[in-house]
Length: 95
Image (cartoon, rainbow, N blue to C red; front, top):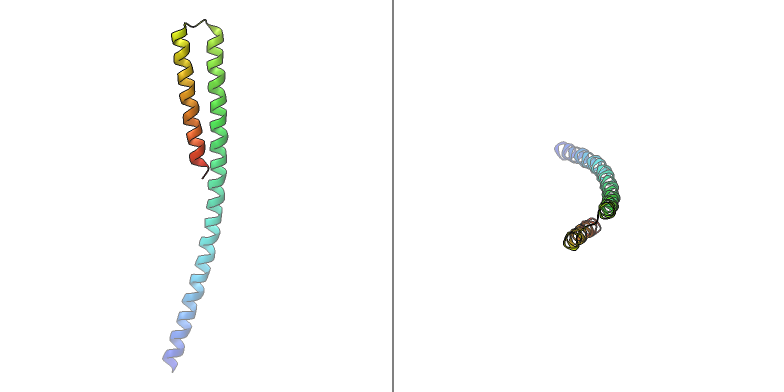
């Protein structure tokens, strides 16, 4: 009978320890989820800034010099490709 009581007490102690560990892990998980969300928001903001900067740079280059139509077409295609890449990155960040 004493062995059974001791076993039950040990089991209860282990269960309490597991409950504490679960609480710690759950709290850490919530913190990590918040950090991921924060980083995703920051990444989206940075991608938008990058996109705006690329547009400004391209516009600046186009206005600074007269380009021939072939070069201009090349730049337009390049800009469109950047926009597609940025849109894809944003879609991947937002589930």
